[in-house]
Length: 377
Image (tube, rainbow, N blue to C red; front, side):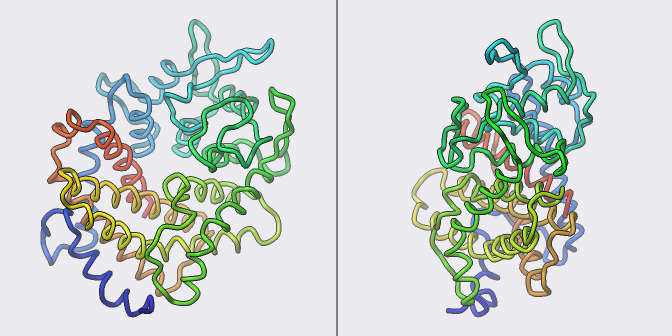
């Protein structure tokens, strides 16, 4: 079966008749109406469940969705709360460097990149103990703590926790915000020379190797219904792709970087259809599990929020101009997003929080990514 044949038949049914995605509100609902309803659903979920003062990870995801001025339940600005509660100092030789423990932010510099992406200013106060620093201090200290000497290992050489081969993706998103290409290069606290261009080059190689089977299938006009290397990266490579978008958008990578990035975005649009079918097939074999429907719904939210967010960011930065066919595929994925969000109305998240907190947390975090994507679409 060619991709064109499949897209004309099976995937249309799959997207419109999503298992577990909840009832159709109205066949006559306009795309704008569906978009507004999805935004309303996600906003209500985020405002209810992402405001736990003790959960910095959830609060920062709320900031990602709602913006830098969003406030938590006691009307404290969320950014102020995070930067006065979760930042620590870390001794490296004689220096005390600002740091957010990895068990709080989960990925090195993920809080940093979220705040930069949502417009937190460099003079934003950062409080540790009885001292006040600036957000720029936090950024500069993050540069000093970042190490890349073992770039091909899952664990950076400084001992920072890493969760996969693309552990550096969040740093690659963050650093181009505050370091222009003409000032690239610094010596970190461990004596290592760091260059963003080299980190980006590694990211490109990793993405291209991991997505090669998808690229070949796309070129042949076929549908590849199996997991490949890119699916082993965090969020299917979504964060690493975000890092490449951030770097190229801000002038990094000479030569054909824009072409290479556009190629990865072509592959991502191809995945907007194929990965939905992969998810459906995976969970169709696991229907007996009591939470199978919830897991499938979350998997779709997870994938679509991250993928459509990257597409929207690249388009806003004039790094990607989809063809007419790709525009249709993106619209189909947007419809799948609306259906998926509608399905959230049928999930008892309060009950799920007690029964399976990990799955509950995934819903909260991925709802925030989905909301950010909808804002940018």
